[in-house]
Image (cartoon, rainbow, N blue to C red):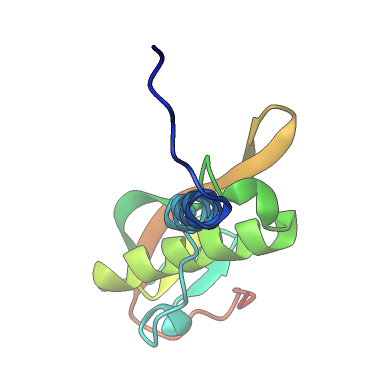
Length: 134
C-alpha cells in the first residue's frame, strides 16, 4: 500500500507565498544601493585632474548593484549607486575630491547587473574649483 500525501490547497498556497517572499528578499538583499551620506555629498567627483594643492590619499572603488537584484535596476541608477559608494568611501578617508575613471558595467546573462567606478581620492587644501558635482 502506498502512503497518501495529505496536502490541502491552503497549505500549498502558503508554501508558494513563502517561497515567493523568500525569493523577493534574496533579490533585494543581493543588490547594493548606496545612499549618498552627508559627508559624501561634500566630495567633488569628476574626471578632471585635481589642482596642485591636492594630495592623493588612496585609489578606491565604488560599486552598485548585485548579481541577484541588479538586473531590476536601471543602468543610470546603478551608476548613481556606484558613484555614491565611491564618494562615501572618499569622505571616510577625509577626502574632498575624487578623480574617477569611466563606469564599468558588469553583466549576467546579457543584462547589466553591476557597476564599478574606480578613482583616486584627494584631500585639497582649498575648495576644488575644477570639479563637477554629481
